[in-house]
Image 1 (cartoon, one colour):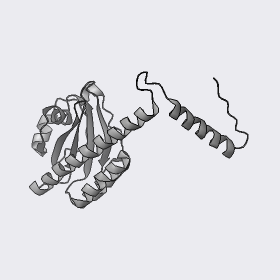
Image 2 (tube, rainbow, N blue to C red):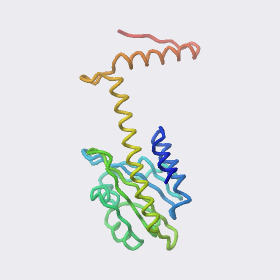
Image 3 (cartoon, rainbow, N blue to C red):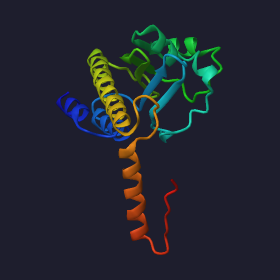
Image 4 (cartoon, helix red, strand yellow):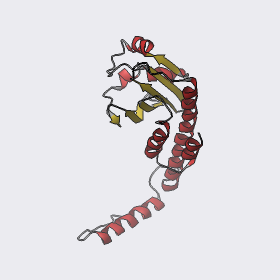
Length: 204
């Protein structure tokens, strides 16, 4: 828990945060898969910024369209705002009729939702396809703890991005401001000095 807390407060890109968080969890959980899911409230768009499955590896393509995702189990968790723990029979029963493709039916599936702000909600989910695998109450509590830190890390990153955008764009028009212009010109000049036969021009 200390490592997770320390990691969530460190200044990191979200991609590396997800993978490092997963590395901490691997020896602690009886699970082969770890997913992070986000849902935009306005558009109802569901995305998976981090996916790991022991058979498919990391960042694999789910090959599922948004309409089918809306009827998925993870969507149910995101909309209800309540954790969901399923055994193999329950998973198979609830998964039927959704039209979603999946590999082996997991022995257990567990997801915990978290609210980032009034526009964005998320969930973390774990599962295992090992025969008779189970997730103990202690491990479920750990996933709930993880979900709170995921929430804080994502919220912090969104705030950082908003502050950076405000610093480099006009507050009324949303157009790039002088600071961003100077930064881009400086970047172009460094590129010209470094690369032979490279030229640049500024059109005013």
